[in-house]
Amino acid sequence: MLDTILFPLEWVVANIMVAWHTLFTWLGLDSGSGWAWTLSIVGLVVTIRILLIPLFVKQIKASRAMQVIAPELKAIQNKYKGKKDQASREAMSRETMELYSKHKTNPFASCLPILVQAPIFFALFRVLNYKMNPQPDGSYEGIGWLTPELAEQGHDATIFGAQLSETFISSQGAAAKIVSAVLIVAMVATTFLTQRQLTQKNMPAAALEGPMAQQQKILMYALPFIFVVTGPNFPVGVLIYWTTTNLWTMGQQFYVIRRNPTPGSEAERLLKQRQAEKAKRNGQVIEGTATDTTAIEAPKTGQRQQPKKGGSRSQRKKGQAKAGAPSESTVELPDSDGDGRADDSTTGDSTTSKDK
Image (cartoon, rainbow, N blue to C red; front, side):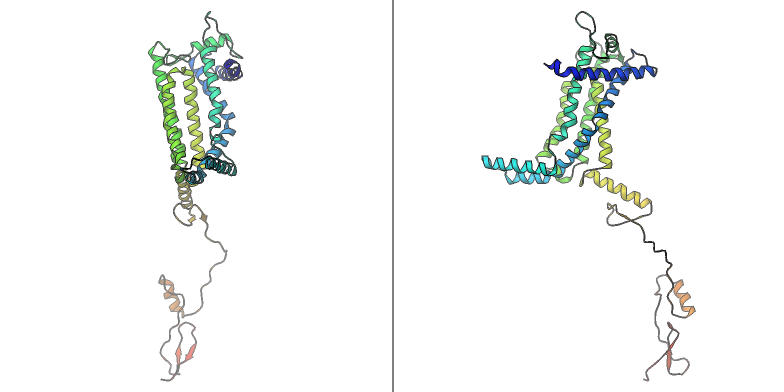
């Protein structure tokens, strides 16, 4: 039954590997070298991940939506906390589904790439374990473009002394154990860092508390532990595939989080800070706080401000020399010409003063 289900995927995986292997051989690598087959596995990862980009976009949107509705979801859970009757459970489920429907998301949408990659992972495992290993009679089976001759080449190919079809447990030499151990450590580290990057940097503060946050933390530590337990059973080629996949995921996720973070997350705060610093370097005026990224250019009216009239020439010059001096003032001077009128220093006209 399993053979029937996985055979189409095994055929696709084998053909993609052979296509990349043919390319690297054409570029000058030895057909039977371990690097040609290792790069073929890396090419398989690149091909699969490019095909999965639409699903990755859906995963990012679903994860972001789940983070945004986390406070509302927590409010629904608190509303029915401690109520174990059938009516309360049904009401809680109904309100939860309505919340998912309103935001067009669900918890399973964020798992799509992982769910799709799992069968491909097992298909590659079977190709390396069964199609590229000799049969009881010593012959090689092959599949699709992976002829028995190429299957034998792939089986004998080594990288740093370890055959791609060897596992940590089944290997006899130290080389395969060392290479497997290094790849398992790399696989565990990249898995942990990817989960940490997603939870710590791209989740708003409200989503870092509650049951869902606890589930994310458990997942962050559980997945690496699973690989520690199961990794020694994987062939070196599968470990290369999974480590390369993790590196791709981590880089892709870093790019998305840096350019389009979740509102309210630490990544958004850092993005606004970078935007504010960039605007400041460009000589723009930043409105609001240091994290406000709204840049406002100085108004350009195209008109030159005209000087205001008034005051004697000597006083205007004195006012221009003193920064911050008022541009216009009226000062009554004593009657200097005896005509009963005081001199006005601003207008230059005379005003009649009252007799005292």
